[in-house]
Amino acid sequence: MDPETVFTICNYGVLPFWVLLAIAPGWPGTQRAVHAVWLPFLLAVVYVWALVSTSAEGGSFGSLAGVMAFFSSPHGVLAGWVHYLVFDLFIGAWEVRDARRRRISHLMLLPCLFFTLMLGPIGLALYLALRIARTGETGLEEAEASAS
Image 1 (cartoon, rainbow, N blue to C red):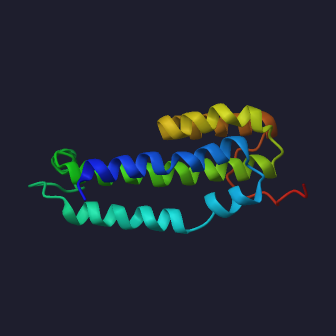
Image 2 (image 1 turned 120 degrees about the horizontal axis):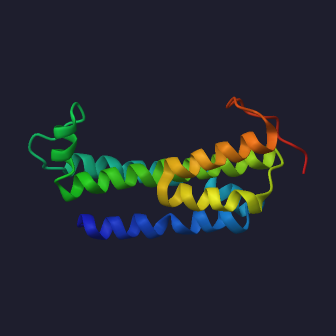
């Protein structure tokens, strides 16, 4: 399969999980789908395939020039994009769980989720700012799950 097709499948494939996080965070189906290991595992397989298929001469992670060379290959860019997809979804799912535990309004969380999907670190920073504003907590310790 060519990298463009795999990119399209992966890119659109994660969107239903983001929709579940946004509109049905407490639904048991969301819990089973978004918080299961199979999606990150499947994307990790795609990631390994893309890495192994990369033919970027001089590509490496040891220097900016090496990373730029790595990303000169369609497979290298695909690997980078899948990396973002996996970790952004993981962070988005964590934000939902953490906000529920801390009783932060889901409506207030929605912009954070949008920015986590579109601009990962910015969405995470927005959520952390919201979390501090709502709870005063600055640590990243896990809170006890609240009985809902």
